[in-house]
Image (spheres, rainbow, N blue to C red):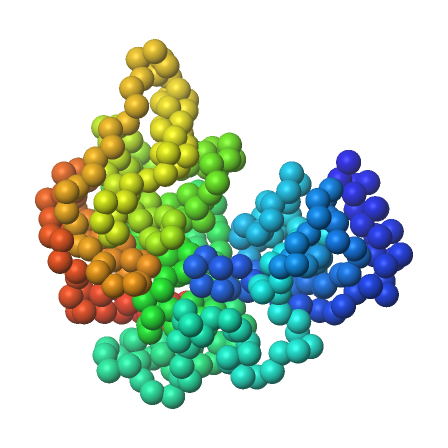
Amino acid sequence: MRHALLITMALIQDEHVGNEVGDCELYVEDPLKRLVAYGRIHELGSEIHHRKMNEGEVRVSVERVVVEDALVPFPTEEVTKVGEAPNQFIAWPRRLVIETAKQVNSQRELFPNRSSQVNVEPLNTPLNTTDALKTLWFAAADIREPRNLWIEPGIVGLKRTSVYINRVDIMGLLATGTISVSVMKFYNKCLYNLLKSSGKADRYGLMCPMTIQSHGSNEDMGLIRNRIGEGGFDCFLLPLYDKGWEFMALCSKIGCITWFSSMKGKKPKKKFADMIETAFEAYHVVKGMRTNTLSKPKWVYPKCCPQDVGDADCGLFVMRHMLEIIKLDVVNSFEKVLSMEEPYSSDDIDDVRRRWAECFLEVM
């Protein structure tokens, strides 16, 4: 079937070669706009995959993958991630497709339609803060293409993975407080360095936010189940994004999940909670426990934790939550650690930024 699709794709390309508009860059928002692939735009009618495209969509083909595990905006049965998209036509939001022929060097035109959400200023004035942040501020000026950084085996799983960091990701961390999934994924590397240096690497497990960012598929549930079964960790720290960053501490040994929301009163969506509980059950079945003896994990919602009172996406607060849990070596009774409603101080948040900056500068 796959071979037939590739042949069909080649025939379509030959037949409609005159309908290619040009090369393009393909972006997604999570929540910041980031480049995930290079491709070509095609004008081959208004239907794709047996449905009619609306005015806000465009047909594209992926020529070069930048972020393999990024989710495509309009998934199909065969393509859910960018790494599965080459040699196939897929739909893409028109506003997230940038024709390379129309690009100019202006930063405003390089990242259009984001000025109201992310104020990306020229990098000519250093931040009034630590040397690491100043260095990162200036280094970001030289980042014209996304940097591919490796996440070593053992940090978010048994396999090595990578993450792409671009200039807008860094500006979100330093200037706007809007944390992308890529920034959060790389933060796992920063936390792992702390765990390793403090002798706690076998106590806390970390998980890639892209894995738990999911739509509840069986594949994603399997990845979570497998990760829970790795290493015998006492506690897993899981950040996820849903119109703002959230965080949970998952203790598989005692069957408890503590949910932290920097946006007061928000609880996990039922679909996500069901996926976590199913992964829990599958993990215990693999361990040999009988299904009739299993009980659902207990969900704990602390009455108070540091709240974000502004319009930010709470990413920096979540990063601080994770850091404090590790530093204080807590694996249960988390409400004793995060027992205040007041926002973190600027020094607390800058400490998170500094740690991320130092880790990034070491490997860039």
